[in-house]
Amino acid sequence: KGQNVLITGASMGIGAAIARRLAREQANLILFARSSDKLNVLTEELRDISSDSITIYVSTVDVREHSQLSQAVANVVQEAGHIDILINNAGLALGAPAPFPDLKIEDIITMTSTNINGMMFTTYAVLNEGKMKERGKGTILNVTSTTALEVPPFPGEAVYHSSKAAQEAFTNVLRSELVGTNIKVLALRPGVVATNFHELRVGYDKAKYESFIQGYEPLVADDVAEAAVFMLCTKERVSVKALDVVPSAQRTLQ
Ligand code: NJP
Image (cartoon, rainbow, N blue to C red; front, side, top):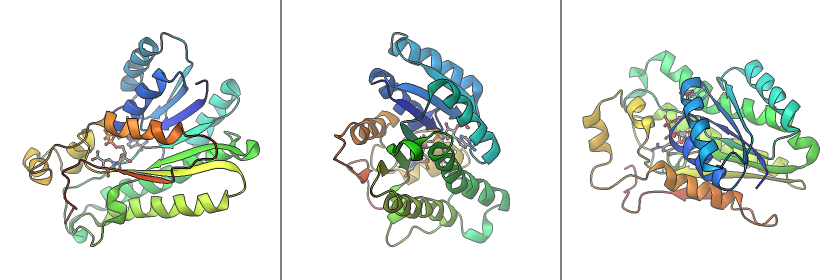
């Protein structure tokens, strides 16, 4: 309650679901994404959910653009004072599962720059402009993926899985750098969740999506949001460092 929470990729899917849950918890929300229309619609919904008792800041931000991001964080901090919680959630997979050399170079650049650079740029801005480092307290929750740890790996997703593995590595190193402060660094790893993510991923090929999730019901975004709120609401001495949230019947990607 009353904490300032920045969520990237807040315009839909898991990010929007986390925003809805946190609005019920009376957190002040800072919503970043590229689609201003969707952010505005969500903001209205969040005002209803919270009965107008929270402050909501909305910024149309592309997490791949460092200067845009740090400016957006600095603008919010002028009003909000600081950021307590960062949820690095913006991310995507592009191109149907395909052998690495068949991927388009622009898709490789988009995936790595969004999933890796975007997460690092946002974290950098929040630790510095967002005053988290100076205050020595807060939480950084990275929405990574079960795919980051899949052994043996799943052929056809070389870039997406590598980007998620990079997120996990970053999470672990940052956590050890911040030992001795009250800044928690956590990883939340979803399995398959029914969001727009898969439509982008399989190039809107419904048949490929159906075959991917064959035999079980995927999670909905709110299932992941519930887990996120659980991780964020523990006592100060407790750190749920990482959590896998998967459909009960999900087989491994193999
Ligand atoms: O995806 P989707 P999810 N700058 O497509 C935003 C991970 N995950 O909620 O910019 C700023 O509904 C985009 O906003 P917009 C996944 O890797 C998922 O499922 O307006 N924002 C939108 O709000 C990702 O890290 C599954 O287009 C950017 C949001 O990202 C996270 O969960 C499984 C952006 C994506 O919403 C949320 O994905 C798994 C940019 N450059 C991990 N580019 C799953 N769904 O099955 C995109 O293991 N966004």
